[in-house]
Structures are given as C-alpha cells and as structure tokens.
Image (cartoon, one colour):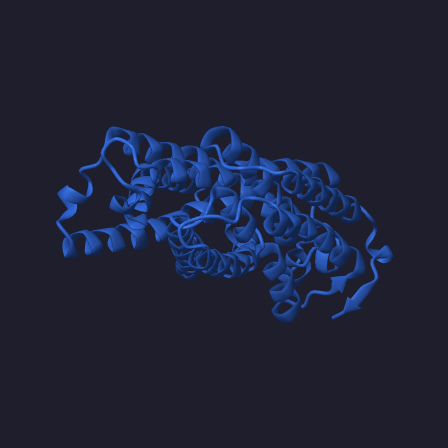
Length: 338
C-alpha cells in the first residue's frame, strides 16, 4: 500500500516510522553519508577557486560566474539523463510536477547556492559547513509546524548532542575567522533555512516522479536561473566574453565542482530522501561538516584545535544516537508535542 506524504515525510526524528524495508533503509544511510561528504567538498573547491593565484584575486571571481561554470558542465548531463529516463520509462510527467520540481530547484540549487558561494568569500570552509548544516534544525521545526510532525524526546536529545558538538567547534575552536564573519555567517544561515524547506518539499515530488527525474528537473530549473543571472550580470559589466576570460585552473575547478560536488551527490541525496526521508537525510548530512574540517586542514591549511576535535567527537556521538533511535519500533517513540 502506498504511503502518504504525511507518513513518508515525517520520520522518527519528529515521529513516525521508516517508509522503506530495512535493507533499503541501510542503503539510504550509505547514500546520504556519501552524498553529504561529496557535497561538503564543494566548499573546499570553491575556497581553492577563490585563492589569489594565477593573477586572479578572490574579488575578481564573483559567485555567479563560478556557479555558471559549475552549471555549464553539469546541465548537459542532467538534460541527457532526463531525456534517456523519459524515453526508457515511457511515462509522461504532468506539467505541474515539472513546474514544481523546477521551482524547487531554483530555491534549493540556485538561491541557496548563491548565498553559499557568496558567504564563502568571507568565512572559512569549516565554518561554512557548520553553519549550512544547521538546516536539520529547520527541517525539524518546519516539519513539526507545517507537515504534521511530532517532536520526539529521542530526536531532540540526538539533535542537541550533535549540535552541541558543532557549537563546541564554533565557540571554542579556531575556525571562526575570515574577512567578514558576521556577513558570511548571515548568508549561510539564510541558505540553511531555505535548504531545510527544500528538503521537506522535495520529498513529496520525489515520491511522485522518482528521485532521478526530480533531480534532473530541479537542476535544469536551477541551471536556467543561474545562467540567466550570469548573462544579465555579465552584460551589465564588461560582457560575457570578458567574464569567461579566466585561468584554466578555474575551469578545471568548475568541472570538478560540477561532477564530484553536484551531479553525484545530488542523485545520492535525493535517492536517500526517497528511502529514509528528509529528516534522516538531514541528520546524516551532519557528516558533511566533519569531512570539510578534515579536508580544510589538509588542503587549505586551516587551523584545528583541541576544542575542534572534542566537538567532532560529540557530533559523531549525536549522529550515532540518532541512527540507533531510528531503528527503534514506532511504538517506543514518545512524542513531546504534535
């Protein structure tokens, strides 16, 4: 029997049970974790692109140009996959679903990404990940307020533990540095709120059209918005040709961001949402900041203190607690409120 949006969107974090069999749920955890880690590498690659090398300063490369390069490499692949999938399945997608997926893509992959890329100019890659991945909090709150969810004691405990670890890193560590930390942090928090809403709304369409079709439609919608923004911005400056007059390394990084931090993780995350739900994917996504911390230290040479290490352990403990709670029977959940 097909589950409803109300049943599948609200996972044990805010009440309810897993919508998929156990073996599919386990695969969903793997997809969510791998997708989160690949997505987290985007911050590292963007920071590398902003490095003042090769005659290009950070201020010379604007966020929308880097986003356009990323989407220029990724968009043809999404279009190709969409065409192949539609021909293979032979099923027509209602126009309203196409429009909804495209609009969600504009919100989740254009607006959020623009805020993210812009914020990375002002703060470290580690701080960017920590701030962006406060979005599970907004997933929980929005899910409970508008999607008929229930906040459970176990879910609250797991979130508090996980985010206490992130708080330790943020307050006691050495990563809260940059050109303009308040501005960069504000941009990332706005992105986190919108991405939390995107996660909740996307689940319904994924159930209707499938994760592959949804991902392609969402990315095509976002790509159209990004390229339109880029063309308008370039024409208002020195022209498109001059805007694309960039060092080869920027094109290489754009391609890397497109494939390893856009195409692969976007499918992994959306497949995971279809199997284990938005709330579980949101919590598993907290692996992303931890992967970013390691990569930022190794690749970017960003600082890492004892407090950063303590916070990392606490956050991993919160993730482990949530995964354990998620395997419990629904009857053992004790909701705090509805």
